[in-house]
Image (cartoon, rainbow, N blue to C red; front, top):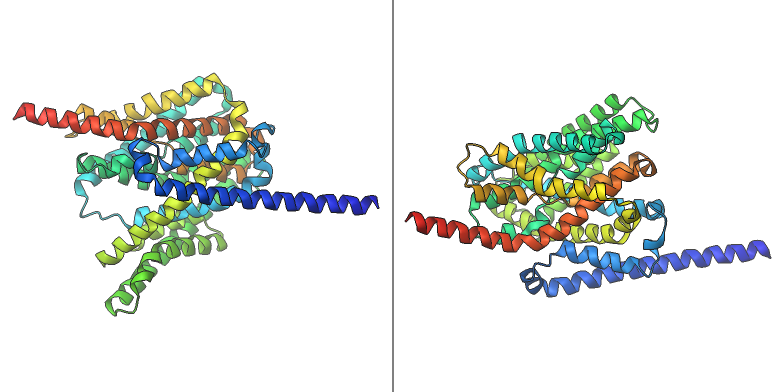
Length: 428
């Protein structure tokens, strides 16, 4: 009798959990629908979709009791669920950002992005790494590097008004967009190697870290370049011979991204590296198809991005907020307000841009989707309980960035435009 009662209680608990999960999904979908219907009005009030999704996720977590669980406890049963959607999001974003970039059309923006990616990004990682060690030496050299790598890639989704304001000079606007599109793919191999090395040091890896890292990255690059090139040639052939319907042109990017990611993971490589390399190798010749892939891909990635930020508010923030300290707040503020802008200003020396434009570019380095997903990936490779300060710090900086960059994107864009107009009229 006792065993039967226990079995019934377990079944009831499972059913209750399933019902809660279903209601969480329903509430997310309803929230996304409501935001979409009012998106123009909300964006005029500087309320971005990531801000709204984080807020709604956090509010839904209250009646579920997630906020009251011990630190990192929400990760225990929900990490796999959160990571699954986040991985799909990053794979699609990495692929599309690399695939739709037109190097010939955006030459001034590419010159700016090259400065930011080749000089500014390594400099930001190095300076951030040094600052973390100086602020908290006990964190360790390698964990400090992992944290610097997590919080260095930028996310254009948090500064959408920057990209949509056509009055902002095109090289500035597109340069920021290209940087945010490519920097997460460039950081990823280094991040992967650093996490695998840390896993090897703490005894959570069965193979040598260097062998494992090189194997994953090499397979990822090889599979991505080969598969991306082949898919691109097949698409070009289908377009030339008119064998593809218009509606299928729109979903090519998402299908290709997930196919390359899944195939590479199955072959033992890093699917994210493969997705990024595949996008670089795609080389679709039809401008119409490229635009179709970009437009549908943006909508699809927007949905997955909203879901990722919803999970961030629902699971990730409640899992670590009790661990937040003043030291973490100081680091977050310095990273956002001083380190990134300073490194951008250094890499922009002798560039044709004004001080106002340099400050603008330096400020719009929001931390978002890549940082969240890197964090979730790390938590699946090494025990997150041993890295509570690192995880809590990364979550804090993303949380602050979601708010301050979301609120400041439109006003600062308008301020820059007015400043440049006054400067131009003064010289005339």
